[in-house]
Length: 290
Image (tube, rainbow, N blue to C red; front, side, top):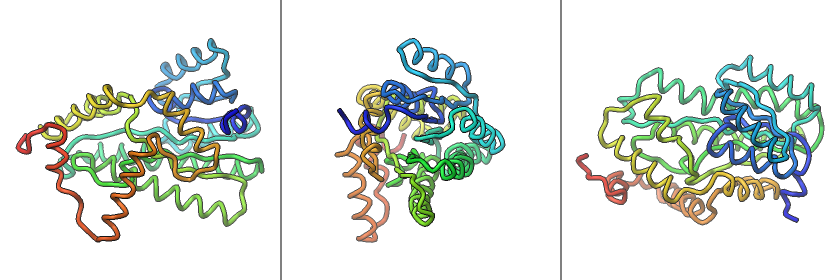
């Protein structure tokens, strides 16, 4: 029996952005382990469909329409979940969006939207759930979704990369601060590499970009995501096991993510500038003058 099967066979899990992609992978796996899973997503119809499918498969799930950028709504959901379930053993802060484009061409409203969802949304959930988790005084875990992008810099993805660096920093601070109050709450920083989803397509649909290079990069990333990205449930199985073990650093692909971490460490130790982005474009088969 795996560590996850022991640790997460009962209790309540809350997954933000749980109606699709990585979040849905966590929802399906955690429900399969035996947890009651709250699917919190702004897309209520999709969340309801996932919950119904989980129930048909013998799991226990409920959907909750939630816009993580609304702190009052987040707090109301936390109050409701604790009132009905008593405890939350696992909080997965997963909701996030992408954006393509050169930094100076990103619209102000789009920049704000990425930060509100990716960064503020995590903060609002922590602000509402952590005090209740501390008061419950039962062993629990908080897993914040950063990204392998939280360990590096990438051209034409500046808002997303900035947000994921922020989430990683927030998670490290949370880990330290919970130790100050001796709370029985484990903290994990989850850094996925490439997991099949519509995140790149959704970004282009929500905020179309006119920069040809940025669009070419996102098209290549979406193609690679479909062709070689991990299945969301399979990735969730691997990452949930690491969370259950008590790991702080949680990767979807241990080898690739460790390689990126080593590259970042080398850059910081050597005080070298970021890599030339044209090398990335060449690897993707994109002309440097695209």
